[in-house]
Length: 348
Ligand SMILES: [Mg+2]
Image: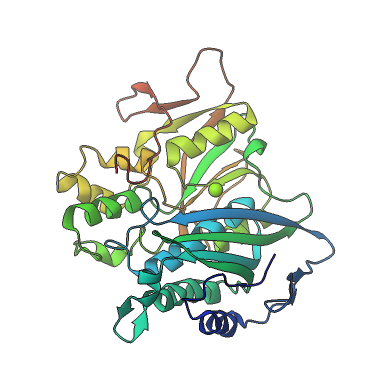
């Protein structure tokens, strides 16, 4: 892979690559060789294996420049990949970032900085937090919309990666943090058309604009006994739990009362933006919390790495012509939960 080879003479190529290289300077024992050669070289520990994931961040699909600050776009771009590493129980080793940005966005200034500078502020702020070195990438000029592609390399002890296919009958199902907050904040952006909508519970953070990848929780989980399957909640609980069930050939029963509903989702319901906060928690996407299963006889702490962990249901045998996931409400009524994860900006 070309290391920040630039194809547009109109963008100040040297300035961009120099800026990236300067910001990418971060020492890491895993990264033997970073930006500057034809390839990067990583060297994991001898008892580890490498996991790899890639994610697009496309303007108009994953973000809008009217709604998202460039810092948020940079943060989310990296957070999505880091969340996938967390879902495998891996620690980050290196990132590769490819970007195609139209000239008007490169030139757009916000105060003293360009849009792209602020994007990199958001990106590298999160990279520093989790000590992820940028090992390379590619740049090009896009004709209309911005497009970012992140590749993340992670390391995990051999044979210890947390797989979607590893759930067992009788496992308890757990989720970190609270759900529906990211979808609620996205609704707030759409309704108020402000980048940072003032909401009563805004102190609880910005789950859509600045999601927190659960790498610290993952590090603890992978060292614990009896943790089986895991996935990150990127498409919504109903969809992501269905992935675990499908890959494991099993089914799941959820307790509605146990689902941790984010306070922003409750607020979205109060404002009349949605009829049910629980619906946002079940089907809203991009929360980037961890969903995992564990042996019922293993005691899972109520907090892991400072993050609340809730037991929300259990894994059961798959019955022919029966739903993959059933949901029992507080009155004991059982309904089928269809995978209903959000399509981002559907209808636009
Ligand atoms: Mg994922």
